[in-house]
Length: 365
Ligand SMILES: [Zn+2]
Image (tube, rainbow, N blue to C red; front, side):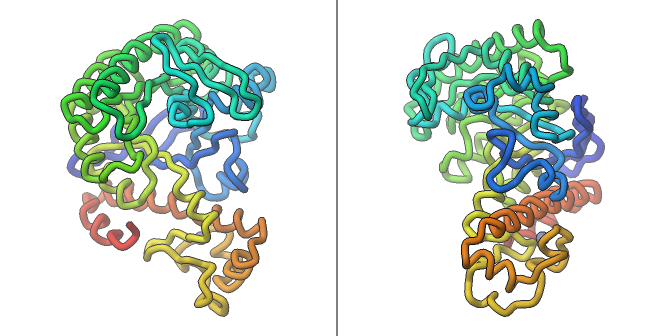
């Protein structure tokens, strides 16, 4: 299901086989929380060469309904997307003031963000929801403490995450009829000894892949990478590794050089909404007046729909006038940028030139 094909230091390329196609790793997943992203649907993902997306099972369950999605043939059919889909469990929603009521010993009590209705999510319940939705990769329900939480809380979250992970695995084995993979998530905050311990505990359960949770929350980047490094040291090499919530190109390259294979973030879609276009030469703030009469494409080397068909001046115009179509066009380019970036990273690893690429791309942050 995961095969390493080439290595450059700790970085590697490989293939991750899913029920819906095989993904070339390392790869980046755009966030499609409700089986759609802002201004972008499955046709646009396809057009921007996206290999895999991540959706949120808890939000889908509370909106479309997991029973309804199952009845309609599963999430791939529901959103007309034939490629890879990960689903997050809802652990991240513990970060939401709007949704979290309380973390209990056996699960999490949430409230519906719109109608205030209470909803209890247990590890088994989360597995049931993700199985009904029918994603290719389910994520364990983890206990994610808030950024800056005290050491006792981090320790408590680590223990709960381990207990819940064992329950997720046991239940998933019973119900999995769709070749759905299951990834475990390690916690441990920024404490090296806790992160190491959590990585060891989660690795011992035997998941298909391993993820880092509770990072990329605004902590100093050096501390995030120290946590990743110590965690990586305690995880088996042959498993795919997923650093949740990281999308800055420079951070992706750094994590890839440590051996991380998988990423997700709202970074490319969110920056697009704020008129930032990502290019290999740095960010283009397209609403700035200097682009008003610029007849060049956003990026000459990009063969996305907007770079093939429109000038910077036109994208500037639809951005400046806040036209809804502009949001979609900018997002399409940024998603294509992420696909191109990951392709360049994979090629660099194959050619043993990741360090060279790192230096070359230093300007893109
Ligand atoms: Zn483009």
